[in-house]
Image (cartoon, rainbow, N blue to C red):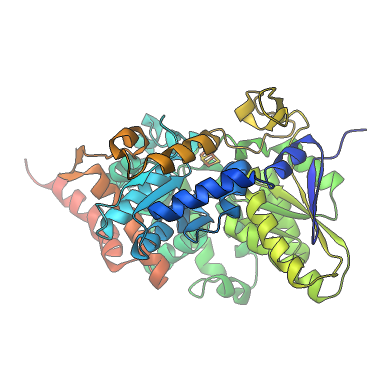
Length: 487
Ligand code: SF4
């Protein structure tokens, strides 16, 4: 008989790990008070704002969550750059970004666009922090994909935020481009089709997300017009058929973490957890996405979406059980990076502690193999979860931890906090890359920031900005006229 997946049960006043992976995750939720005190004092004395991604190492998230300094923000990548700008406008003198390099680059670009060029921003590793997905857009294959888009009339390139500023700039020079995140990709793509007649949307580089979007649109196209309009008022069954004909996605871009939630994991979830809620990120392979989407549609028992959607779904289900007086354990299969556990614990605990004695518990199931845990004799626990320990990931269960995100360390964070404002020049390796090379007469940083600014305008107004729409409708025609002109 196979061991069940590891899990963490969150109760009103405790968390109960089951399995060594979950035990390691749980341990990080009880951070060392001396470290918390030192970091808190440094952040507040030097006015350092901290923005971190949900996938950050649980040890780091545990320490950050225990700090009392108010300018600490943990979220998905959509909100990270905005939070950095807000912190500076609230008086922070430095910003530290915990994530991978495209996140610190995005935050730097948004600070610059808001006129805060002088505020130093630091990453939390001296070495470059890559991302397998971002790297798959920096390839000849992606160039060929963009060339195809550039040859297509009314083409809009919707690029996932998980790409470098250089990729965004290179793409925008070829095809009008807007950035998206997993939180707003559905709205962005549907709005593009609604606002630009005959548009062709080229999404990239995440292949699984592209395929999942296509499945989502196909599923929606089979629903009633009212249900479709509830998701996007400008669409119905007929318009979604057009969407399916003119939605393209890149076929060679993969996040190595979400890739692990493959067929076998999905089968185990389906067979061994028939009554669990299933939460799957848009980046996971189709099989797992399908399980979540099926449960979402059958009985509101699942969510297929962004990290924020997953967190909101778990909190909504826990709050509903509390309100209904159901004293029971709610199982949730977490089909995304395990670092989200800290935010989930904090969110669930807040609900349960506001209703003492409810008897409701949340069990977070990590669909990872038992071997997704590595011996680490130098670590006080003796083990660490995920690929950081060098054990590699397994298609039998996934490792559920991103080795790139885990390059951010508590030691590096303390080093940056201790050194900032004392010896800033020593922190040169911790600054994001500047992207000063010129593309189409502009720096890559400036040109690559434009697709992000388009996304911010879309987030504010719910519509693609007029300048971007005009760019889509005229650029191809201009190019065609240009190539038809006599030499
Ligand atoms: S989980 Fe890691 S590899 Fe995957 S997209 Fe995020 S940063 Fe990149």
